Length: 545
Image (cartoon, rainbow, N blue to C red):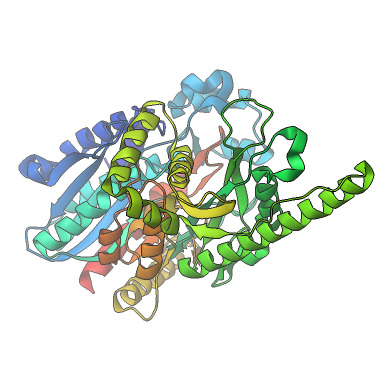
């Protein structure tokens, strides 16, 4: 059996296990990967190098698979191969959802779904296989497993390969975050030199009809600013005497939503502008009292952004929103007074914007370690109630404010999980330069040997676990760590380890279309006939540099 057939067989085996993100089924996929790896002769001889490692404190009891192959001739040079186990749900398959994990049977009936013209053409071409996870990203795992099988049997191979199959990428990247300390531990224990890391995500078309093949030299980052708006309650009959936090939140949204000033540009790429993912007041029950607090959080993508600079910009826009809100209120109250023929005295409000770190430090001065214990107990309760990390973050900020001694209107800024650092190979770094040279040779080899054009794209814009292969902006990382809600309590961000890791990394996989749609599909000729050979060449070239 050639490697193409082995990859296809392993792909179909992996796809058959649902592994839907955020469910205990993710663990089934990890077990399947582990059992397949056990069929590789090397791991029969060295079972200590194959491990299914549970994620500490994970409510779904998930784990990641670590498989370490070391050549017979000792070497410190190590290539890391990684991909995620989980897939998104299959409700979009409608009456065919039972076939979503059976590509062979799905192929026969998928025309029953409303396919696009392009999807129909791809189906009829015979060059694509359809099914949930075939592209995102069970193919990548199958590719790495079978490459590992192949290379582990080569007498001429010299070096180490570490394969990591991680859960949670479609949610909060819990698997890769748990794998970071593992990577660092192996590096220190065996003095390994991580010379390159491949994330085997398939390249993504940028528009309909785009069939370009790509290698990504970096990945965009993601940060979610979280705002708590504290107003001044009042009876609705006297609403003009208070400060409704919903108005504060609305004005901030007017200033921040789709604001190009918060876009990040680098190497010809520009991130989309910020957008609000959640906006809510924190009033539990109906009453004729205006809310005291509201909250919102935003999605901001980054390419080469200073976190400290971003925090400064967020504080400025929040302060502007506060001033604007007070001006709006004063103008409207004056108009109301003119039509009601009454004068309304309002308490003077001074705009105030604080970071979560500032509020938390003050609370800790007053309540000490008892406050941390209180929050930890609350988190246990919230997790039992199946609240997501973002809701827990809002609750933490609310509870922290309630222990803050100064009870005046304010806006508090923190960050909700997850956090994805941006990352990119840099010419000026020797290790990165070597990897860039290898990629350049791969691109040339693909053209010469397979008549295949591969574009070097600077950023994988859809977010991926490449973010957690090392962080250079240590100061920015500390700012994140001080202001991210739930860190070290319900959100594991290994700050110290990320600051110590620095692995040259790329995103390189097959070619797929319509990720997260019922028409998800994988191109067979490129993914099975070209990519495995390019990977083999890249790994050998890296190890021989």
